[in-house]
Amino acid sequence: MATGIKVDKSNTDTEIKGGFQFTIDNSPTLIAEYHEDAIKQNSLVVRNAVLMIWVGILLIIGSFVAYAAGLTKDLLVGTLAGSFIDVFSATILYIFNKTDKDKQVYFNNLAKMENDKKFLEIVQNTSNEELKKEILTKIVDSNYK
Image (cartoon, rainbow, N blue to C red; front, side, top):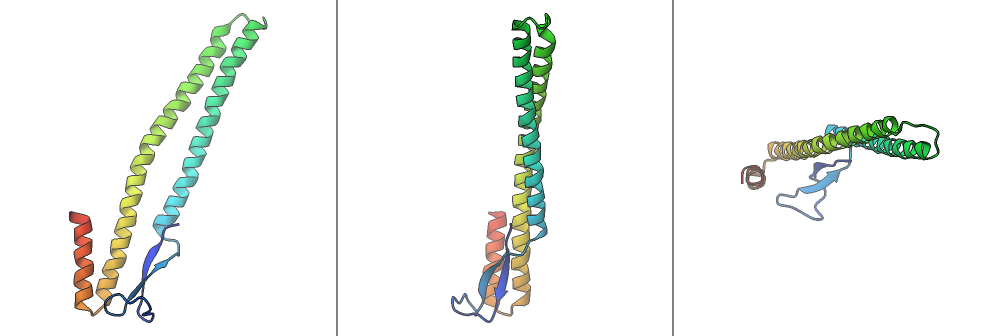
């Protein structure tokens, strides 16, 4: 679950310039909910693709066993069907892996933007000019250097 940033003006045990303490807020955010949903979808796709690969392998093995036992004289049908299933499932896994990497980059950018937004809210709500300058400098440095 993703975390957010919260400012507590009352607690000054570990004071950070101007009497502010930054704490982590564990409430779910839209990004966290999106990420959890993506993880569920990812596991479903991978689980089904791997299952289909095993079905293809078993179909190929079953074709060879049936041919060796003399139950059929056509080895080609089962072997081709199993091979097609394996190639199709492997292609799904390849495409899924490629899009999953792109989705992870997108998620990381969303999380960074959300944290920057929280920091900008802190800047907007504080009257401490030195703290504003420090936070804005760090946001600009992290985004543009």
